[in-house]
Length: 260
Image (cartoon, rainbow, N blue to C red; front, side, top):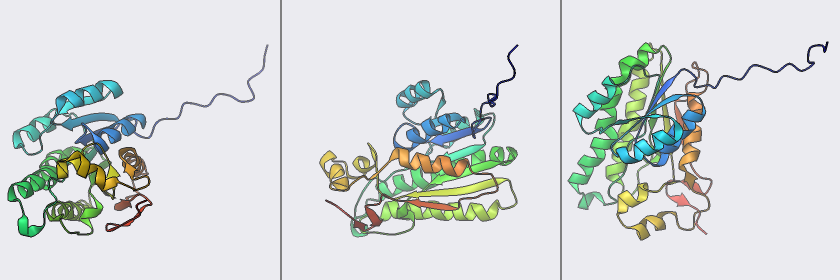
């Protein structure tokens, strides 16, 4: 009879997200969609939230996630979304956007209101709704996708930079308020990321949107940010990555970008 194998097969490695449920907002495109794919690959059960259910349903079917409608500007939608969840271990507050590039002297207050509703008030609504579940999980993760615009101001960006500064302050405040609870508070602050919609939504003109990235060698992609998000969420739970700033190498600072 043959003897035992000198190299017995090792047990399959458990994925770091196994048994944990992660909610990703703004998951119909860009960083949100890339994060959903990456967290599924890490073993998380992923729940996708966004307004555009056609895109959301298609993505959910492709990766095996769950899609639920979510409009962060609508309190009833937020309540319905939260009520449909049995457990939440991770909340990735990704939904947001910029909707103008005007100087303050020409401020469009409707654009300001929209920017704050989506980036700030909507984020607070959902965070407040899901905090009890995050605490009850015993090892919750509350992650904010902010921006380097939340750390540095620049001309023509006040509506967005003000909103992202608010998100940065929200993360800092929650980290203080939750220090005795089993919840990590993480902020990812990307610099220049080329996605299919961000710049276009901001300037409204495809040619102007393309010009934002013209000549920049390898701006970040959504997948690069998703990689950072997954890394922070899969550290041992006593390790808190308070703030991770990530830029392409070609962007030394908000105003200093190498273009060819």
